[in-house]
Length: 348
Ligand code: SF4
Image (cartoon, rainbow, N blue to C red; front, side, top):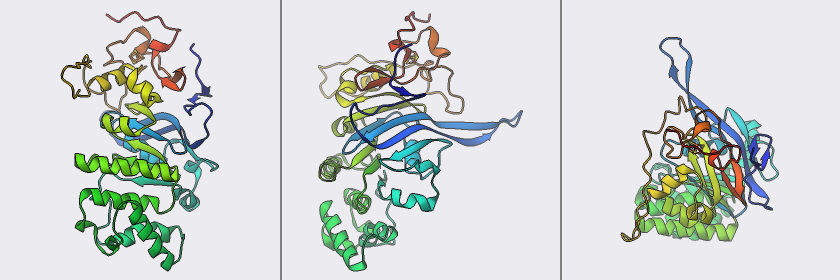
């Protein structure tokens, strides 16, 4: 069996020699979606199935995958906005956040913030921008009323908005400006980690680059770690240090950006990258056509979840589950092709 850097059944995907600020271990979450008509058995949608990774200070980990693969559920589990069925989340020096009560979680929520996808829906239209950005400071009792005014002004300045914005309402701003307000709110409490859930997908292309540049500058300034959830591979390629690829609730590959985009190892990652349109018509990359539809997360396939669609499927794939193993330095992949125990002979 190929050697992996596993601790028990959970691979340690931290960059070699680094100290993680966020560690996620074997995260699992299912949702009840109904009952079997004949036997009344519970039908469970397996949204996240044993995800583990870690993130170091000042690092951006891009999380990519098709819609419905469990990216947003995973983000919400890490933030404890929904509770997992099992698994652990640690911030550097913290106890397991999944075991804490809401009251005990409060000091750790400060260190773990979110930027939402929808800059229109994520801001309360009845509150002024000053109240929205200042609200986390009140919740976490971080400063007096007078200090709060100054802190909000400084935060707005930090994200490129005028202090005059304080007394205005969200509807008076454009999409890009609203996303800046959301970023200022996330920054208010001095987080170590920000989970950015598709933060630029609702914005115009011209505004997108401004927000990406802002996120990069803030990361450099405050050494914040980002978990950047996106289906846009070009944005992820620009912003991330490492990239994790998710399929049907599981991580199938995680690697430094250059390695993942330069030489993807998992057949699903190869297909995802081959589907990205090339701006230069002369540089035609071979297309990889996947068979069939994404299987239902209510009844995920046995063995490798990708086997019904994989162009390289072979004998063990439908029965043996591949685990995430380090096949090159810091490059982890869950695929039997890289397991010396198996010799590939294609399925006819
Ligand atoms: Fe394809 Fe088999 Fe690898 Fe799964 S384990 S990705 S089916 S080759």
